[in-house]
Image (spheres, rainbow, N blue to C red):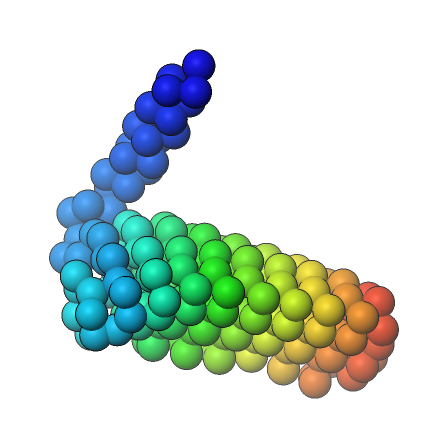
Length: 160
């Protein structure tokens, strides 16, 4: 039964990644940048796994590791790690202790600290910050710099 579950999961992941395999760099495995399969200047189109630290221009579909760092362009999909840091835009789900998006964010952030420049969606964490937000923040400290229900409000804050 366990073997069947593993095979089904593996086949599903391959099927989901097939459209992305046509891209230039579909997979990246990294101990820490620059010790990785793909170069720092490459974008990853299907899957990236960072044992310690990974840095690429963007990542699509799945980004796993301790520290996940993207530098430009739109990253989208699932980013799951200790720290997720996007210098540009992100669309999807971020799960980490610390999530930072310096560009536009759309989706769901769940972590101890969530930070997004321009956000659309849900931030769930101990500390949530957005310069602008079209959505909801749930946490102990919730900050929306511009046009929020309140600039600072505990437990829940929103802007629609």
